[in-house]
Image 1 (spheres, rainbow, N blue to C red):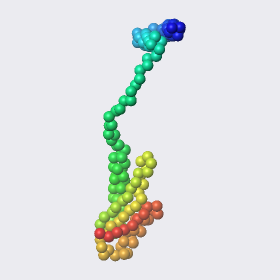
Image 2 (image 1 turned 135 degrees about the vertical axis):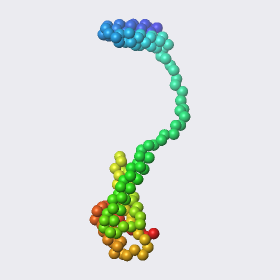
Image 3 (image 1 turned 45 degrees about the horizontal axis):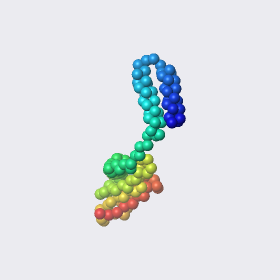
Length: 154
């Protein structure tokens, strides 16, 4: 019982000090209410020996999380691959060596850093070797050595 009296006295003293420090103004009623709530909690805690509420294990329904970053990554890869494909197609047409299809392999590394790993040029069967070599040379010259440029046939 001695602890209860000491807690109530300390809460009363602290509440009084807190009310003295509150400036006059429009927030005085809210701060006074907050002080009263704090005093009440201290009294209740000291009388009951602690609130003693056991919170049971609460199981929340599993909510399906939609990962928009995966969709964004996929869309970014497609946009980057299409831009490279259009550039390669334009380059090949300017070079006079267009192909029937162009495949681009793109990856997103880390935080949306997009890298192009591979470019595949698809030619019709029977296309002359010199024609293919000319197309590969033009693309490799433009993209550099870090990107694999290869070809295949329909």
